[in-house]
Image (cartoon, rainbow, N blue to C red; front, side):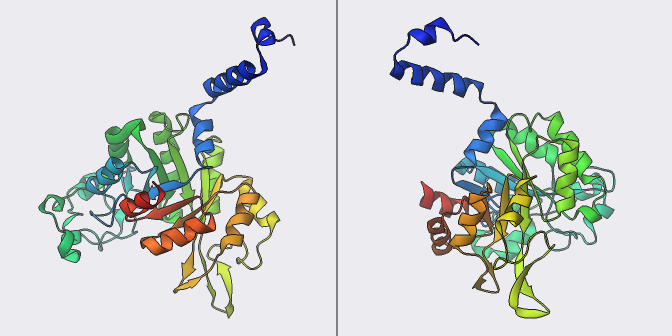
Length: 311
């Protein structure tokens, strides 16, 4: 193929600058999102949930205002097929209702108060504006923030939420979130991630893992869903198997106060193409320690603390 005459005529310096500009122009938003994962990511866990009721608009507004990289949320499905941002399988802890969330219609859930509990549990942070906060749909969040931020979405309890992946992909496509590089989808359930990949191969996926003490041998650690061996046994091949479908891995750093991973785990994952995001880190000293280990991002209820460290 013949090169453009203008490029042939350029000096080496101008050629480098021109090709960089062309490459930048040709980078799609989705490609740019994946490139951005090479830098440190501040992930607001259920919004700024240390300062406002989790998964409410108040919590997400704060995190967005502070300029986090991702708003993190858990998605479940109502009895009438609507996607809502809610962590627990039951509504008792953070609302004035009781029972399983997917036994309720969206209209019934919207009638609940999911903010007052925060005031009762956090007298020093109580705000009358939190009272009467409503549960959010995924559409609510997309309509409020659009492409002004990125979203880190967990498919929560897929076995309790049949049809969750199909509904999520449909909503992401309707709001052009995938091609615009606005979303990561995470799950502890490998099958859920693989289903997402089947539905739309362009959705960037994060495999969540949770390392804990093996009940049969308390000197060993195991992974909750057995998606990998324990950290002491994990190999390059194990990380590569995850990298076949995921663009990153999310893990706990400690279990019952003891480290379950170390800097070597992080380096090994990265060497096999997997950025490492760690949940949920709220104390500044812990944040700094993990940053020093070379972690690629942190989930936190206090994104303001993390932003102070990384900025």
